[in-house]
Image (tube, rainbow, N blue to C red):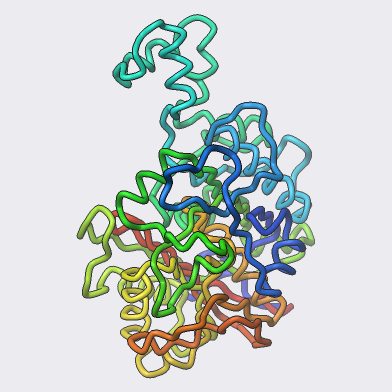
Length: 427
């Protein structure tokens, strides 16, 4: 039987349950079938008026209904559904009694336009009322539900109550690296011996008019609205921006010893985690790629692996001109000449950018890639960029044996997390 400790004598951290929901559908089976078929979940927005918006497409999950029209409410609902799938697969604990803490990646929470208008109307004041005044108004009378919903910790507290996680839920928001951060926090807690199991979740339902306008003002979004499915084109020469999307991913992590003791099915291993922040710019990556390089190298060192051991990279691959170029700079620095031969696919070509949830969702897709021996494609790859001679598994899925893989998450503000994921250990 394989050892229960890694190269540094720490508990090996494994995955025993996964749940995922994206614009491609709900659950591992639906998502994996669509992902490997090269299907796109990007569609025209119907949830709110789109007249005047430069970008009017997104990877929405309109098949999930909420009574309360707000990002936090939908983020919570998505998280509930993926957590339920992950716990059911792990067969851990009992209903409402998960035997470990919750680490939650959550988008920034602020009063949205719909709630601002409702509060201003209720108070009989102009909609330009200051934000602190709106918060005070929300805390009074019959509007207190709005106040409680738009507290940053509300989603985590509700999920912790529903699933019976232990201790205070830890909610983090580290931009597009957040989902990876939630997994890293769970890994570190298990390695320190603080818990034998952890629930790591990333969720995001930020597709609303205000967010679209903000990202549009940053020139970050694609304006290729027709057809929607062709908009996200990572690593292509004609890429012009990312597509906002919604989704959630949940992973049950355990120490290998704990999982074996209870006879759990092991889905894969979280072999290493690396993080690096550069503070170069609010949105731009450092042009020399050093933080990206440091992030990947730290993850490999944490895993006790050399670059030659990596068989596949699940790229951050946003489809923005700068990010894709910087990721390629990082890959060539870490892998040298081999960078052109390593399969590197971007799930965002099909599901768009799920922002806070991306790191968790893409870690799940990477583990499914390892387990199934099938590499998801990067679709819409029609015009190769001569400056990025990458094997992006263009347009069609490809069989491939993967022992160790990297999943990259690079966020605004220079917040970067890299995970090294491996196959389940042989008994």
